[in-house]
Length: 466
Image (cartoon, rainbow, N blue to C red):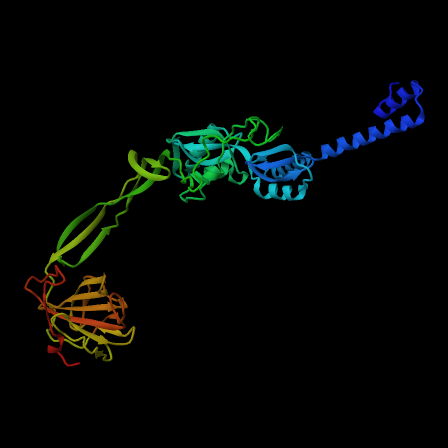
């Protein structure tokens, strides 16, 4: 078997030539010294670690960096569930630096804090404008279908006939920070939302061109033409700005079917023996029902057009039959009035009769009886805005009004006697507290109440003392 070491080969050679032992020992010593010198010279070579052309330290063995970065990206990839790559260019440059101290731990800490991580992704562009990042395996057809489905409604009486994405959507490859990548479900929720959400930072977008390895080993200085690394493409933009949130416009056509009432008609007969304020209902009317179909166009959920495309009667309305009186209401008043609040009550200070206050306010406890000031016929009993619940009684030559009642106890057309309880004191309408606003008005000769200010108001205190 052939000797493996230089020392063994020298020994055999000397023995073959019958060289004496002292000579042999001298040659062996020379070999040892030469080997140590070569080893010492080699140890002065180190790897200079560069991140984006910036030196961060030196290491003795390149694997101290390579294995560290591999482990870092692998663990981050497991965390994000995607393939992770370094975000910055790392160069390992072998140089002769005698007496240089290695900085392995410092270099690894610097790499951990400043390397940055990227993953391959797809950038969604809406009408040419970058919107957000999606997984690398995202398919455009699936995204468009999901967006269209997000605006589809098929429930109850609404059916979506069609749903179309009207914006131009495209996907382009890029590298982004892992935290920027959205799932298709998240993207659809974001794009279909009225909220602006969190825009993706332009600084997180980089390209996919990778000319060579992330690690570039070579000897020499940084001006070496072999220096290469990660080169971003056109998606590297002004990092002082954010990409504006963009939303996808989806046009939908819905079919809506609703039921609407058909108002009943009223047929009126007239009876000369009934007063004009009296009415009888001979047969109650009932609304019918119709079913109407609309087509509704929406832009991203907002209705922009509606047209009626069909209508059918589900139930015919029933006509209401009424009898109205035509006879003039009789003059059954005496022209002499009693105090309209049972058990007294006082006029509220400053709320007596005047040009701007056409009656008197009588303060009384809530629920106290309101009395008809004279015999007559109830012309109106109902509710108004500022009046609250109120009653109007026709007495012939005069009209009396009772406002802000808690409740009315008479109906239109009722004949009432002087002193009869017609309601309860309240504070309905525009009122600051329980009281009765009482008015007396002189008939204008028509014998009919056609408007609130038709008949001239007069001071009630002319007829009685409180």
